[in-house]
Image 1 (spheres, one colour):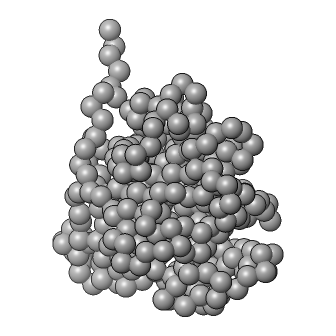
Image 2: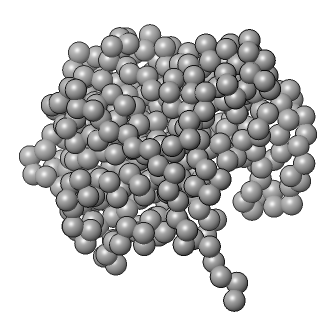
Length: 363
């Protein structure tokens, strides 16, 4: 495993934002697929409802709302932020990086590094690894890790394998250099042999002339090459084998056990997978919160969203030792352990706001 230890940097704030529009699966999809089919899907995945972005609302709008709230709540001078990383697979544009748009909207200094990372399910832990590395090796004192996806914009509307699974969300995490803070530990892995397991085949430059016509695929669903495809069997087998294996190896490497952690926060893939991971890592359900019943699989945002769902209302203030694990698209996976003051985790906010200045004049 690629393992790192970071000293004197802490996670000092987390905020999440979801669209105001909320969909109940049974209400929306029973007329389309039948009540029994929808209920069976909910029983397997755990998803009962989720929040869906407006047509005009992008992942960066949700991340921006979270970042603005966090910066204001923490009373941070925007000129003190030296890095902004945005992790998403649903950017505003092919060019430029959406991080530059967010840099502009947040009014950050020119002395601030800003770039995107194209990752989904594992993106939060990979994003933490990246921003921690750059802060550790530079004079940057504060950084913003922004994440978000509006996955539903890239899913065929009658694809029963995924159209009911995903929710839209964004999040902001503030990191600060703080002498004497508990160490943060990370470990990452990738298996590019599985790159086709979760894929949108067209929309960039590999299949540039792909048709947008809906066709029947081998799994029995109609979609175009511009829609998300998941090989459910491959993703399931990968998730229940590689993710718990890394968690267990990480705890051995760190000389820790389940008892040393207050919570295991997992990427919210689906509830059946989460239960398998609990079983294979011996983490009890009391230490493994689930948020996807109300928010769906929110891709890169699912880990901070689950933290905010658990701790955002400050019913359980104090320093918690958190183990996080993200896994999925790529295929890629990783873990991060960090001690976080739950008083720095804010309640989830709802918004339908979107950026109206993003269109380009053709003059």
